[in-house]
Length: 106
Image (cartoon, rainbow, N blue to C red):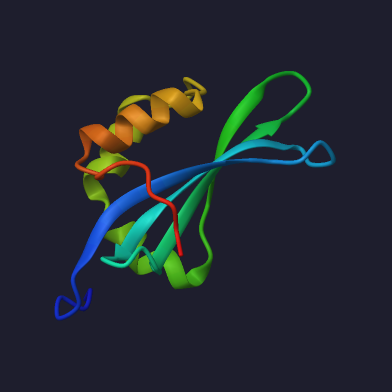
């Protein structure tokens, strides 16, 4: 269960990978404390597969609890299965699911 004693928000931020990586773009999203510090975070990487660029969900074990709380987002992703959504489309998914928008993490 998520700790409801500390205020947190659903938010995201976008980063871009360096030239030496197969990851071309990244959006990290999750639960952030009001001061912008990370509570629990998940990422989607856009990976160059050489035949196409595809999104990949990337979650360390400390983000599984947050992932389980994003049922609305998982359902929306399921409705868009195998469509290789762009970062801009994924941001729209996040906003549709009530994420508060882009932040600068601390």
